[in-house]
Length: 299
Image (cartoon, rainbow, N blue to C red; front, top):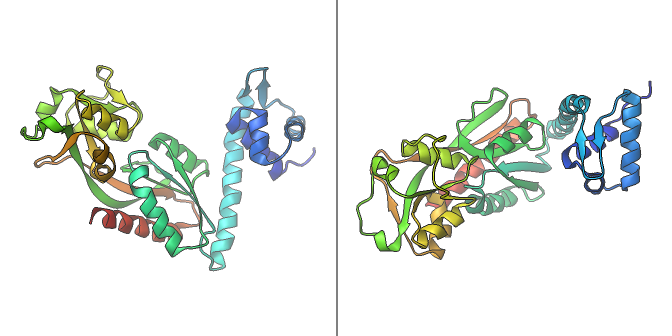
């Protein structure tokens, strides 16, 4: 039996992710015919097809799905070995692939990247902004080194490091600024604008208002905090946003910001990474810089 190669695994992984030969070939910096040949050779070695091919799409077969899980684990281990070798020689990370949830990324990332670049001038930083569920998946598959999310995550394979707590604030139309701040019970009766399904911040806001996530609501949802704040400025309703978002979002809309009385709604922000990562000590250093960046932002 011919030998499987790491190169074939990387080509397979690229195609499994892109589901398109052209895009996968571009990601691997090779020609499409060369990629097709490598995939076909891999299938011949394995004696089974990995992909269903049609004129419109490429999808994994049942065998391909099972094979993909094992390939990702192998590639993750190889990448971790490379980092382990580099770290064992006393070198800091050469690359950091970090994920951030959308309700943090626009407000904290510029400060974090600036401070990381200052501390580690040769560090190559790759940023991924997406929802928590996707970040966890990409962490476990080895596509990310760490992620900044709202805790807790409670995944046995991941380490959680708490960084800071953050308050939620109420955003109302400017015309309502002198009205009393409603408590959580009153918020239930108001036209509350929320992020769409999948955002952890949505669930946290619903929890504060004692509203079950599965209950049907009017179509008062947005894909970003910016959209929600602009809707409030237009007089459509009210919303909650994290305090770090106020300087960016409140300046471009006719809104008033109010703080809740105790008990105040809050969230805990932290960093997560794989327990098996060889970069644990370096990631702890980076988490300290992230924490300090947030403290400086709120000062």
